[in-house]
Length: 334
Ligand code: UDP
Ligand code: MG
Image 1 (cartoon, helix red, strand yellow):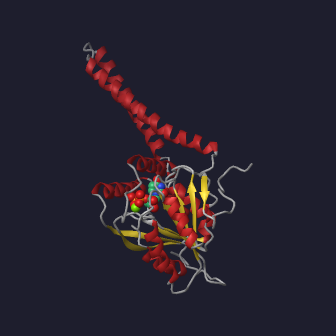
Image 2 (cartoon, rainbow, N blue to C red; image 1 turned 180 degrees about the vertical axis):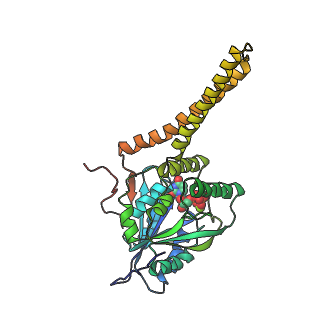
Image 3 (tube, rainbow, N blue to C red; image 1 turned 30 degrees about the vertical axis):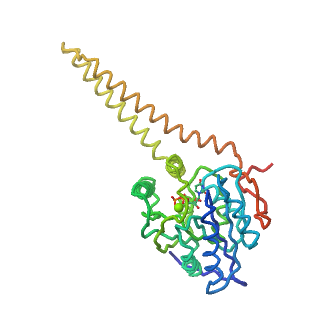
């Protein structure tokens, strides 16, 4: 971090907390109690809001949010019209929050709200992005941790995002300057965490232990995780296309060398025979070509999807306290 410039406010800075929620009806009331206790007891009392984005849950998550909002108008809820994934839900919250800073917090109590004052301290000391990095994970299946490790290794070593923490982070604070800059990004098939890391600004991190889920189970299916991996890679590097080009060149050269070998053998009176070797070459080449077309297809599909410029999220309902301001900055202007 270079040249920290502590944020200066005429009045107490406002804190927004943004929570995507998918089938979290049992967790939200508990989270509200813990969050309220923490926010109401900040060393420097600050006005706060809690934006909960119901990602089209199949349970009664939105009714629970409405009940909380009726009790406390600082709770502002919205229900998306379709399940769009937590990154899209998060984008909605980050576009609509009004705070001088915003803290992203999962609904399942895996990220303890009690860490929030530490994030705020990091911010007040001059950082514009404060990551809460997992020092450990409790009650998580071995394959979940392994997949997460592999993902962060790929992002750091292959895609080149060296700033991403190796153990991952999905709990963080953003300064208003970052929130405003984030509004300028129009892409939808991306990883918000990777995008924020890529954006720069003054970043710092604190560490915490990710807790076990209190109720329910993770909404991240294998298919969702796989899409995030491909989104993250294609959004930040053209390396797979480069590998395809070089790989293609290498295979072509090998084929050419083999052709020379076959011709020389034919000319010297001992022609190369063999159906099996031919089949091997045909199958290997066919496989490589299909893989290459698949990679191209991933990029092409994303280009098509972005060019449609569909709104990133659709709103089914909001609680009376909002969020109400003009919506998606990424929506096409009429
Ligand atoms: N989530 C969401 N939409 C989804 C899946 C998850 O909004 O399709 C929310 C979920 O309710 C939670 C956060 O995203 O608040 C993190 O998800 P989860 O706990 O399932 O992920 P994990 O902890 O396994 O990374
Ligand atoms: Mg979780």
